Length: 461
Ligand code: UD1
Ligand code: CA
Image (cartoon, rainbow, N blue to C red; front, top):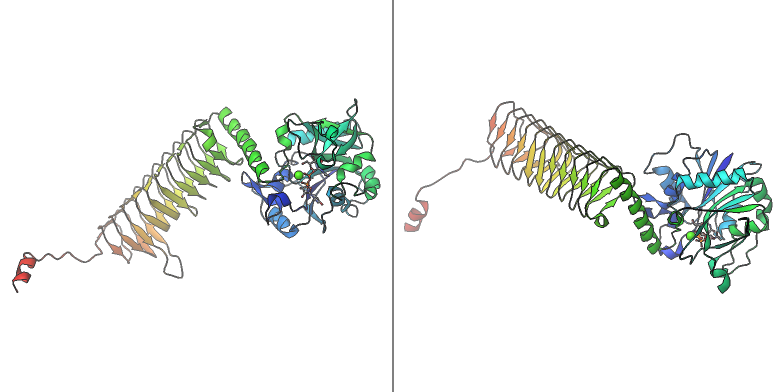
């Protein structure tokens, strides 16, 4: 039986933020959410998050909506409060009443170590079980170990002590083997010695790492790729983690057959799905739950968030959020799709067009300078330049419906609620306020009056 505990009570003073450190985002997900999800592949019976600084916020964020849906078999999240943050050991002491009599292992993860791979945790657990260790600790050899606790082992890889960077002597600082902040403890052993921790160190804190002095055997396991165990203490670390994550994600997609032009200028969240032969052009950002099908070319200069893009679509200098675009459509330059816009196949949504909650049938063109909100358009509709749906009366939003084959002349206003039938033609410059049946021409503007020679006559008076 395995319980996990995530340390998430600290403020993260070095972040210089009101937000608890573990709620800072990395590639579209909070640090603590990432840590939780790195344990999704092991069988666990309890999941405990230790919260303190603005704990209700951490709790809300984890319960309120994680970016990636949780494994339905995961046990419910439990929150344990550490009212005063007196150190990582003190945080784990808060579990004593909650894990009384628990006979299994406790996996402890720092809430600020977001890049761990599930595989690494599995390996740590396997070694822990295989050697029947009292504790097993994830370690790494870092080129620059500054800021991390140093782990001292004997020739058998058994841990003798862990000394925090700030408590190290000059000689101890030469040891580059660091504590990653990921531990597996045999709980019945840890439970016994937890009350004995002392705060006799530079920070006057109760260190979880001091427990190794009372437990045996404690084994160190080196992580293969040390980038995984980067702990986020400040904004620089956050930027470094983001670089590492981006490199991981981009490598994955390039290996899978996606072309990235100027990858450094592109960002891709790790929940994005791309098919082979997608081309991503410079300065393009793909966020949230976005998917892009084969043959599509996105960018340069585009932002796509929580949207599905079909095959062979082009998106040029455009912003698309919470929307769907079907195959062979061309979006942009400078289009904005939002609020559940749904574009059919072979459409064109062009220059300076904004679509909000609009469903657009196949082969429809909205090529220039339009706003369509709360609208449903059939197939092969043509929307002339500058067409606007007046969907808001100052209080409520209303719907516009346009049947297939209809053509709206340039610079028309469609005052919602309104329904135009199929194959309707609207004269340019119309302000349409009443429904129009199929196959009609509607001219809703004042007739042009021309007075020949008017200027001359007027001047004679
Ligand atoms: C800790 C380890 C260090 C290790 C490093 C790895 C200790 C004493 N040191 O140092 O050996 O190399 O992580 O990243 O454990 N927290 C609480 N309650 C507290 C204090 C901290 O919940 O009272 C949480 C923080 O929110 C954070 C985590 O514990 O998520 C680690 O705390 P932090 O202060 O960042 O520890 P480090 O100094 O990085
Ligand atoms: Ca840390």
